Length: 155
Image (cartoon, rainbow, N blue to C red; front, side):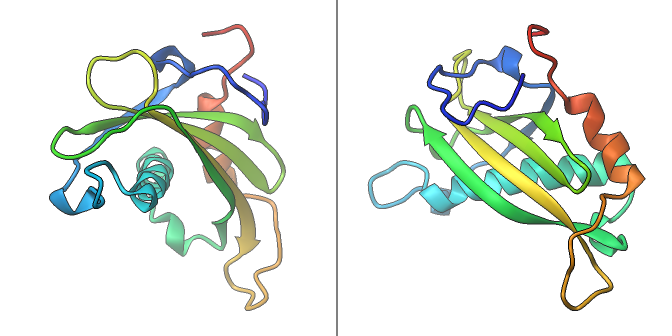
């Protein structure tokens, strides 16, 4: 899929390429009995970085170029929370020279529609430079994320 900042339709399982199950914890729920907003962002971060660790076979924190989060957002569709696990679906909308735009869908239960969808942008910087100047992403990262690109009409 192409990048769609103003997207209003609700994503479904078919919109994502890579999957991971995340366990919810008692402490993840807020005072209102649903998942705390910060926990959604933790799940987005886990979905992206766990994929990178597994797909590259390396500790991505130790690469000469590392991805830092430049942008995140979340669209909430329905409540989720403890005790049921959450399935995270991951897809890449864009791979640039030094950045990657991910979308992460959160699903709980049998519904085909996402309970929430996050947008997560990594920008690659020089891990050896104290100023962390922007740099092209490592080839190992590019190879790990290009298979996640969703081509329009391929769902």
